[in-house]
Amino acid sequence: MKSRVQPSVELFRGAIGLVIAMVLLLSAPSFGAPCDRCGQADCEYMVGVNLAGAEFAPRNLPGVEGKNYGWPTAQGLDYWKSKGIRLIRLPFTWERLQPTLQADFDPAYFDGLKRSVKLIADRDMLVILDLHNYAKYRGNAIGSEQVPMAAFADVWGRLAETFKNDPHVYGFGLMNEPGMCDWLAASQLAIDAIRKSDTNTRIYVANDYPGWAASHAKGDLATWAEGKLRIPEPKLLRDPSNKIRWELHMYMDHDASGTYRKTYEEEAARKDGPGVRVSPELGVQRAKPFVEWLKKHKAKGLIGEYSVPAGADIDPRWMVCLNNTLKYFDANCLPSTYWAGGEYWTRGSITVIGPNGWKVGSPQEGEDRPQLIEMLKYTRNKDKTAP
Image (cartoon, rainbow, N blue to C red; front, side, top):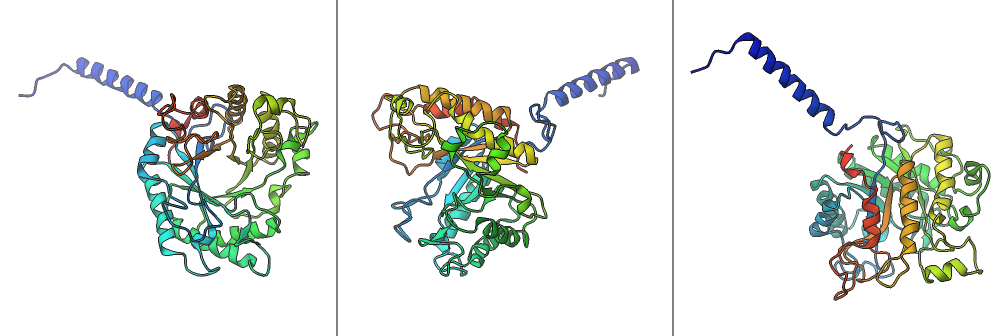
């Protein structure tokens, strides 16, 4: 039997319910609200990771999956999701995907790519598809007689047609570290091909400068960057959707190669080669001209690769350098994807942060790598939803 409640009591309960609802609303994550750092409602800041593997053994073509190369696994992606990492940059190889230029994709390799994207989407994670070819195909540069620019446009037109309706495909990375070619013209053709079928997905254009030179930059850093970047001004590329994103790679050894052949102490003391000596602020010095260039042109960017070495016998001062770099990315809302994770590395590799990063039998096996511990201080990824 329904009890009879006095009107005043019902009004009181209604008021209490309204207060509770307001409290819950105000305390819930405010998706789409202006970022408290940059003030933009469409802030793209995230800390992500490259899941390397599908681009391995580029001289062994087509190669054998599971032996020469491999795709992310469900178990590996569960690991990254459990750490709060949402953004994945996924490298893959043009020759394996498309054995003959301007022809159909290889069914097995293409299935591996699509399967990887689905695994990422199933976990509500985001992926940037990275064509990891250095502006070459079978050793020949884009724009050469062997690799006409139309072939580069063709591969991206086909990829866009496949992934255009997947909201978890966060972006198309046109080319990893493009080498000697007319990169401006090649990029424009690829953008035009993508936009024929996909008007929404971000397009990442690699626009590196020599990191060691950035260490010395002084004065107007945006102007300095314009003199060093492959594409000095964003307006040189046209995108009707206005979703071009600019990508820079940077490493912390003296020549910005990411090879880390010397110890921290040796890097700090060396007098040979380009660049300044390693220091706690080196990552900030190398990123700052790019950040100032983005600000000047009101453009958005990504640090697509960066790393430092770590391990039981490696100088912990590298972690200070990494922390300062990540803090700078965070303060400027600059998203990044660390190089690298993935299950196909040799355990103990000094820059790898995946679950197989520590040597078998080492005291640290099973623990998070030091680089990941630093990264997780700056993720803020819990506030992101799929676009």
